[in-house]
Image (cartoon, rainbow, N blue to C red; front, side, top):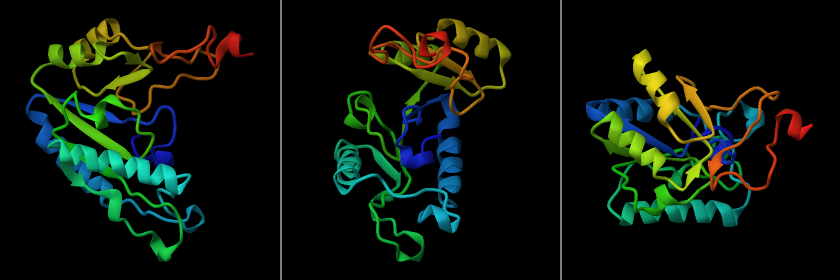
Length: 196
């Protein structure tokens, strides 16, 4: 969800909130999965292609630099990725950044690239407050085996689209698509009867 379409889509997941002692295991599993992704020309059975322009590639890389400079841990560094077959392009591989704090630009800004930031919290309540205090509210998802926690999150989170154990919480086209707070501009949504 964070690296598909090279992270250049509106619903790419850019921030992951790890609750409690699961963080180390979760980061390790994401790193292991990220290490298997093939970067290159999409016609050659690759998992991820290049970014749209050199200017954008450099901008996304500058956020990784900024996160590192602010004290975050770069677990997977996409700045030096080489494309399969040595193809030319604006390559930036999947990047996983751990120990991100809410004052870092990798958290506060929409990067629009293959960068996944991990913010660690101690409890569900702290995670909910983190999401609800954001000025944005397009989409969010919770991954849990606890049905009560899932229902509580669904009712308490202040975000337009909520997913339970799905990576990208985008509804079917006949439902309205849109976020809350500063994630919605204009007076209509993209899908549903208003879109038609």
